[in-house]
Amino acid sequence: MALMIGVSGIRGLIGDTLTPQVVLDFAQAYGTILDGGRVVLGRDTRPSGEMFASAAAAGLAAAGCEVTHVDVAMTPTIGHAIRAGAYDGGVIITASHNPQPWNGLKFLDDRGVAPNPARAKRIEDTWRKKAWRCTDSFREQQRDSDAGRRHVEAVRGAIEVDLSPIRGTRVVLDSVNGAGCLEMPGMLRALGCEVVHMNGEPTGEFAHTPEPLAENLTDLCAAVRRHDAAIGFAQDPDADRLVIVDETGAFIGEEYTLALSVQAVLSRRPGAIATNLSTSRLVDAIAERYQCEVIRTAVGEANVATGMLEHDCVIGGEGNGGVIDPRISWVRDSLSAISLVLQLMCATGKRVSELVADLPRYAMIKQKVACASREAIDAATRKTAEAFAGERVSTIDGTRIDFADGWVHIRASNTEPIVRIMGEAEDRAVAEELIGRVRKASGL
Image 1 (tube, rainbow, N blue to C red):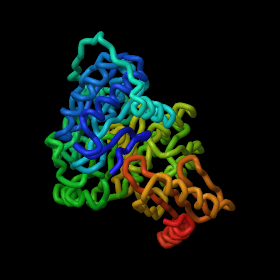
Image 2 (cartoon, helix red, strand yellow; image 1 turned 90 degrees about the vertical axis):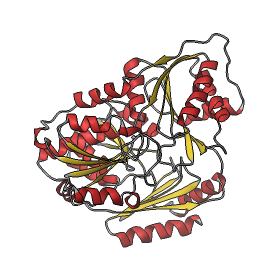
Image 3 (tube, one colour; image 1 turned 90 degrees about the horizontal axis):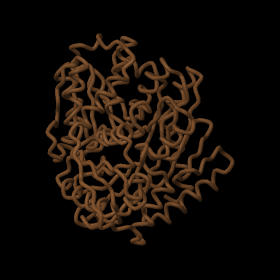
Image 4 (cartoon, rainbow, N blue to C red; image 1 turned 180 degrees about the vertical axis):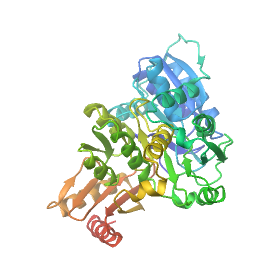
């Protein structure tokens, strides 16, 4: 299993491809690129996180950085802290939604934006060439225990709707024993909700497979029904992604987190939105209602954030449950997503199932295919682009083909050694047929 290196950071198997030495070296490489400076360092709740945070702190210090430890914190909390505190960058020890044996690093720049492909390549090259600086002048390390509270205050301060209709509303929250355990329940209670908190101990011992997909959230669905709750929320370990269960206990699909958030924002503040090539057409349908532009980018929050900055977008994100509210930070933020969805419920007086029913219905199919190497994946995507040259094709990230009755996107994963193939159409059979045609052309 190779060490995964890309725009989503560094991920590897603990004690195998990811060791304290690897983490120290990458942190020292990033500190070199930052030319020293002030850096925020945090981690999710994985048991290996403290060990790797110590290694990262050593690497950053060696490069001359002043390190501020926030200890266990959500990725969006660190993004907010960088921006609010005028830091030069940030490092988060997390493997996001990857399973228990994994850990990794995410890097953020002075805006709290994840590295774009060019910057990610520069970090990798500095690491590979061992071209890092090492200073003999060390700066005192700092601690900040208040970053989570300030993040919550920023999200609450951005609320634009009277939330009195949700006072006393029962909400079930599954934090998967991750970083969201610490701040999210308190924020929901401050908004007036009654909280049933599942997997709410910050142990890093995941109660289920941590990626917030339907097959991993059956207990949450059952809890929403059992507690007669109005909504269920599931976070991933670093709390940058959020998925929703409606009041009937039905998993509505991770694509709806961004769709409902876009609806909440555009209904009050129309403007451009940005999302990646693999995200559902739901956002296009909503944007069309308000005559707003949709910017499509390569997959990865760094690419989406760059698109948002370039086009002055009012909202953005990805169809994996990731929402970026530029008023708060430039990374995906489950707190912002929860706030926006609750505001939409209050503004419309509608239940989650009713909000979903108001949107077009599309059938989306997501597949994963093992592939021997990145070179093989690149060859498959090139073959696909050539085979469908007569259609509308984008090659900014793998190959996406827009047909008259649907679309298919084939690309290498940023976080796992696999090929992702996604397709969407109004009819599931059509989506399956389109994916079949693309897979045949690609040789996968």
